Image (tube, rainbow, N blue to C red):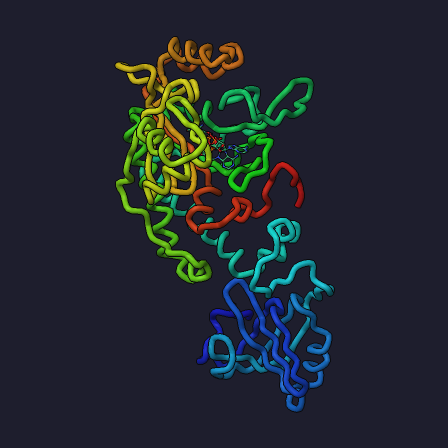
Length: 429
Ligand code: ATP
Ligand code: AMO
């Protein structure tokens, strides 16, 4: 029976192992093969004078990144990684890797992101790259646990849709028999409709598609959104939930991924709650004194502005009380000051991680806001109808999974947080 490499210890007597050949060192009479699997490394040591002929024959033909099976005795030795080595009695080449390799897996310095993603199957063999996705998986696990423990219902909204949700731009059109359709930008309209259905608390972790024209290090054309919607909750309630979600994600990574975290040169700490809150007006004031480009009330926060405010705040924080004019039509205006709405962004010092709001639940006010934004209520008919038949007050948010991972691990490029990123120029692999 195959033993995973981490389970081969100094006390193991014999083992059968299968792994990729990470490194080959041939010193003439002595050769070393560093095997790798998802759990770690193990050195196989072949002494030419002592090894069986079949082992020597096989060892000769082995190239790096081939898959081999080895059986043999295990010995403790300080000279090998993990303080033990296997002495092959049988060695079998299971799958040969051609040479040269398109990407050097053992190299410590990573190649350009593009080369790496072109060869993702090799790139992801690197422990540090594999670790990103183990950590992402731990984040997903923590979020599902949190949502289920708080009584949320998991939903799956359609990805092929007839209307925009976030304002009409940035849509991928698609031929849908004789109709025009689009890839969905957000589960927004559907999660809201489920509030009318009485589901009360829903979540979805799934793909969103945005036809961002530009190539940036923090935008993808296909991203993963963590979406929630909660009835009888206001914007403050869902900000608290968002904070719990971020803290739960970090805490599970800290608890279950200590080996993976060691591969990153970061100071990993679970963010402290409560996250501080500043109003949009305060955020603009901070940006105005810190950045050269002019910025004033009513402007979107530019990348430079986000950075300047982030530097001042120094940790995760919320920006609240946004001008109604620059937030989507579904954000609820304050009753006593409708120029400002109950929307918020949740920020990491490097960038925005999430947007959310208390939503408008009154049909006529929603229609008015859709018209104010220059959109046509007709194209939102399926969405608007539920607002006529008993829509409870509700709030929610969406958070980008890749941005959460990117900021957690201080990755320079969002593409590193996706196995197979889709960007302006990339449709394969
Ligand atoms: P949201 O979708 O909530 O707006 P976001 O983080 O994508 O989230 P944006 O408001 O789109 O935020 O962008 C913030 C800033 O980032 C913009 O003001 C702009 O400076 C920059 N930016 C956004 N999208 C792009 C893009 N596609 N290309 C280049 N820069 C961009
Ligand atoms: P918004 O458009 O702000 O809000 O998106 C929410 C979060 O999703 C992530 N995100 C992206 N990540 C990578 N690449 C992209 N192109 C991209 N676009 C968005 C960001 C962003 O903060 N319906 C609302 C949410 C709500 O109110 O519930 C929405 O989609 O991290």
